[in-house]
Length: 327
Image 1 (cartoon, rainbow, N blue to C red):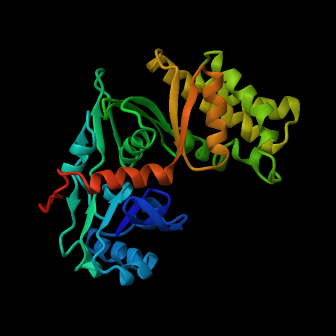
Image 2: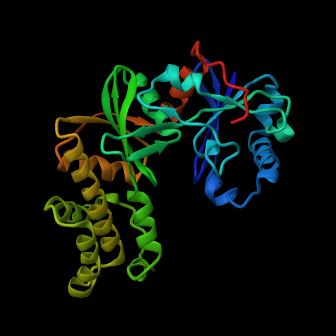
Image 3: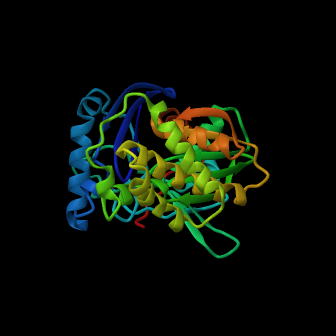
């Protein structure tokens, strides 16, 4: 029995896994690293993290006292439980397994008697000198390709920071981070556009968002500047008296459209992708945007499956002797 944790910047996901199959799951929304632990000092961090983990999966810990815990995500970042070194791309399961970090007894806090390891994340320097990093998406990306029976693929992992990964021969050879979700959150909650979206009634049918979302995609596809296009949200409200939900969809279409336009420039040869995400409107909108920009979806893999397959492969890899040295 294994306990897998996907502890991101926003949410906490835990899985009780037997032989690669999820037996139980636990989610604590809003209890991610950045919102819950960023203020913790280095001296209190071990205690805070270990106490929360113990409370979140207490029943599992009692029932399976020997079950190891393997974590991925922002929990291994500078603001996380421990800051782990990045593995350099290109990398596959072997390199990631070899780069795992095992927490010391002191770092494990109130869980001092249990094996707890954290994956290291992935880093890349592009040819133009730009740097990129990710934590957990490398696990999901390789897990998704394994689940889909693919050795090579272009993957899209939507999120606060959307990741686009290129896998060749079972290794991640290239990836880009696009801050689409983060930018949407800032624009819709702060600044001059935020009041336009308030008091909008929730729509039960996501299809009601399509017309304005598609118009945002078309605006982005015309190839103008993103900053110029964003202002069209305000202009649209003034001249067309659009309702809040329509303006939100329009903004989403603009941002995702510019993301897809950039990805098509970076990967002009691509014709299909693997889409990895949680069920919901975000997945639907990315599917729609990909089709508009000439990328067919060869398979859709949910994040739970992707992360559990990935962590299982890392856990069972021969090179998975997690390091005990202090970083």
